[in-house]
Length: 229
Length: 253
Image: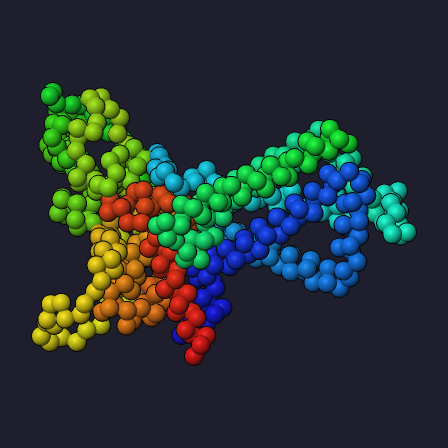
């Protein structure tokens, strides 16, 4: 007997959940970046129009938000379980420990997943407080879209990026997200049992490419907004 | 070549219950042609002559095929030479006056019994959970009566090369036994005789591995690098597929 719930709690099952939530979250981050690129539009209201369209989804938006929350929670809780399990599995450490770092594997990314992940979580909280629960129309962040008054998110972003400390924090966390993904992408495939002598090196390469592209994409925002305002 | 003198720093622990510590020893007059374990033998002879307790370590075949030996040398599992058990590591890999740190494999599921000797019966229990095929006794079947494709034989053989030394667990930053368990599941699942019980095997062996208190696999690849038989983590992927297959089949029922 192998009930599904028991299976998902096993070492294999945990990583299957980890991988599936990881893929969904990568997809979310990609869509998020594409949306953010509207900030670079010549029309300084483009991002607000985009945001307004999202807000007009109504109930669908709540469904998406709850789904996203569940994805994050699952990913974070399993990460915590794996971290605790790892600490318990080796109560006495080594006096001297030299890692072998076989070429082809990403040692920096793979052994820091919990730390890069924790930093991204801290950023996520700051980020949500800043935008989701941050200043709105009644604080003067107001703009017209289709004759309606909406929250001026564009201004909120641009103002945020005027702070040196915020830009540094943002750039650091996005770089850590890149490191997280540089191992996470291929690792998710491996956790789902996808490994092939020819395609696995390709998946590893694509993962690193995705990590670099996404990081540069996000970091380009404060840099470009600083210059074009 | 001149014989060497080496400074050893070795983990000493009286028994499973007591606290151990690192202790210094000098290995004198060590020949470059000695194996690492022969070097320890000589150090032990000197210790015995002085009336001291020798350093306990495991070994059996001393030709790299039994899986009994295994220590961490200067932070590297089975020592600095890849694809080699520590019994096949030769002293020519070291220089005169070198400092050598020797520790046991570290994992909750591999408790130290004494000095460098660890209890690996957790591996035995994983095998007992399903790492076998059920065949009635009787006359041996004809050789080649069941044809197996060459590529499959090669893959199964790569996995079957596992000697169960525990290097994968010792090298894994998470102390995961995934490579060992995967090698056993993979080896049997690939062959026609093993396919019959593949689902039950994957389920039972994975659940036993979890029960023993090993860590989870984070796909770091240190196990593959440390494995004296160079077993690939592609077998871990196969273990996941085997387990997945067992789960899906259970849903279908």
